[in-house]
Amino acid sequence: GEIKEGIYVKNWYGGTTSMEMFTFSAGEAYMIRNGKIAEALRPVVLTGNVFITLNNIDAIGSDLDMNQGGGCGKGGQMPLPVSNGSPHIRILKCLVGGS
Image (tube, rainbow, N blue to C red; front, side):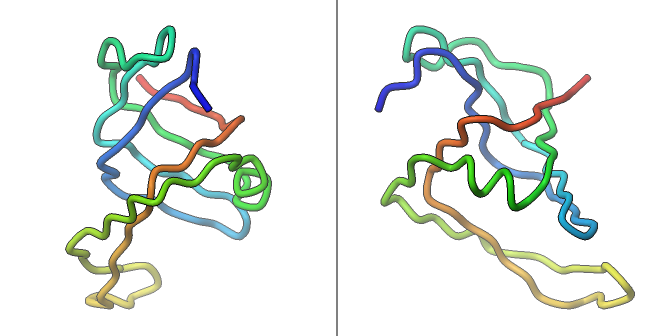
């Protein structure tokens, strides 16, 4: 389905979790207006409850893309190797903040 108005985010800088809450910082963010990617936004952060946000995913693309990965230092685990990736997803409702 088409997105009339929303926010398109990509190239994640990183994220954190604490129990069921999460925060992810986006490398790029753009407004979607009338179904088209429009102006760039200032850096944004997505945050919320993991389970509620997962429940708000209503579309998943078939374009899986993995990044090269990095390391996790949480709880003194460094250099625990980690990677991430995802196809495009559409989240109906998510808390978006920024400066």
